[in-house]
Structure formats: structure tokens, C-alpha cells
Length: 334
Ligand code: KG4
Ligand code: ZN
Image (tube, rainbow, N blue to C red; front, side, top):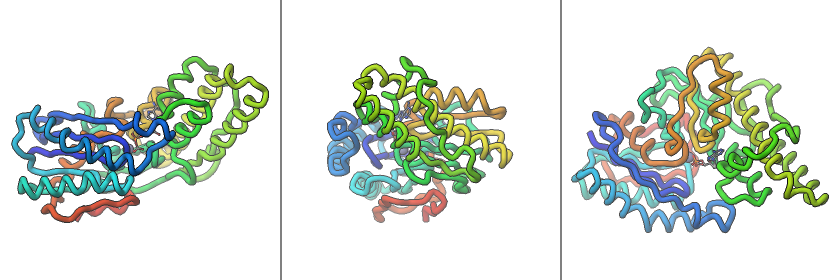
């Protein structure tokens, strides 16, 4: 069974082909980063227009490279995300499925992230604890099987990726900020500033990053006033990164130990962070799984593989699904 995956929820136009026997056959991606960079964040109207420009040529390319005539199912991201961007993927997926007489399946973007490690040779077994960390989400999820997701914790304010992006902006670094902060941190001292590790002593498993962001903002302001900022940017980046990663790992270990998980999955854009991967692996006594770097950030391979696991729920084309907000626990594809 051949599944065509389409991802257009934010600023990446991505297409993939997945075969439930052979695995991933092809995947391509066009990033809009340079289009949004001058604005310091994603501009929804620009995102939707560029998906329109790129999506069909990318689908043609993946199909041609694989010598595929038509897929059996088209799996597309139906939410959560930017509504105009989602509608491009959804409308094209449904139109092509009508023409090809195949079925569609509207996929939850975060379920895609959650299942991305299934694209790797070493796959996690259920149950596992998933730490889903991206530009829009910071979630701890109890995963008992496909569709059996229980939210253990989420953020009370900013998502962790958003915090990386905002701190990068304060330091004059380009968007997206996560990889930039990681790079600059290599030249900095992570002990130079003692930023708060939010929520570590609080009960439950929720995150909060606004206090950390404010602490960084105040430190940057003071350094600017003293004319010292240029010499201290790397120290700020390294100290922020360490505080943010400590906060993520502290909550994740607490959730894993208190709920007896012996496997943890890290996924989502911030899951590409090397310190997060390394420090969690070193501090957790069980197994840690994560997708390869390119499948941590948004991509269509994860949507196609989610479509493969959800194949029995594929429906006839014609209903264009697009939801800006969509809680992970509310997935009901039929
Ligand atoms: O999953 P993703 O590609 O898109 C969303 O669904 O949001 O995540 C993008 C986020 C951005 O905030 C970006 O700064 C962050 O992931 N990110 C990172 C790293 N690579 C991407 N954050 C920290 N370290 C990284 N290496
Ligand atoms: Zn994402």
C-alpha cells in the first residue's frame, strides 16, 4: 500500500511517499525560512501563497522519482497550524484523491511528530512517554498505542521553540532561533548567567517558559545599557539553552519515573537540539528514541507514516478538513 504524505501546516511545504512494506520511498521539502526571515517569524499569508506555488511541483517530483502512478491513500496534515496554509494542503489532497480515485486521511500534525521515530530502524515499543517540543507545542504525552494518547503536561504560556525564537530575536539572531542559539552556545559559558529553571519544584508535569524569557530579556537590557552585550551574546545563549534544557529534562524525568515508563520519545523541532538529546540520554536509565534530525522538524515523511498506521481509517475524498486548533486527545479521524 502506497501512501502520499502532504505537510503544509506552517512554513515548510513537504511531500513524501511511504510504502507499508518497503518503508520510506522518497521525501522532498521546500523551506520558506528565507521568505519569513525579514519579519522575525512566520507570516501566515506569505506561507499559504508559497504552499500554493510549491506543493504541486513537489508532488509531481516525488511521484516521478518513484515511478509511481497513483497512491492508495493521501495522508495530509489537517491541523493544528495556520488555517490558510492547512487549507492549501487539504484542498489539493482532496482534489487529487478525487482525480486518482483514492482515499484520504486527515492527520494531526503532532501525531505525525509523535510517530516520526517509527521511520527509524530502531522503533519504540508501546507504552512510551513522548516529549513533543516544537514552535507551537511543549507536550508530555502518555502513548499506549496509535490514538491512545493521554496528555500529562503542556505549557502554561510559551512553547519551548517559541522561547528559543524569542531569545534569538533579542540577541539579533535570524529566524528560526533554535539552531542559531545552539550554534552560538558552543562559544559561550553556560554557567555565566544563572537563569531560572521554571516549574522544577512544582507538582504535575506542566511547563512554563515566560519567566525564563523575561529573565533573559532583563539581562540583555542591562548588558545593552552597559555597552557589554556584544561580548556576552554567546554566554547569554549558552546559559539560556542550559536552563531551558534542564527545565525540559527535569519535567520529563519526573513524568517518566512517576509513571514507570522505560522508554522516552523526543520529537518536534526542538528535538533536534543536541544538548537535549545527549543530556536526556545520559540522565535517563531507560531507552531514549528520537527521529533523525531532518525528521524532527516539520516534514511529510512523518505524515505519511502516520497515514500508514491509520490506514484503516481512510475515507473518501471530498471533505476538506483544516483545523487551526485541535487537541491531540481529540483525534477521531472518522
Ligand atoms: O516542529 P517544527 O519544525 O515546527 C512546528 O511545528 O512548530 O519546530 C520548529 C521549532 C522552532 O521554534 C525552532 O527554533 C526550533 O523548532 N528548533 C530548535 C532546533 N532546531 C529547530 N530549537 C532548539 N534547538 C535546535 N537545534
Ligand atoms: Zn511541527
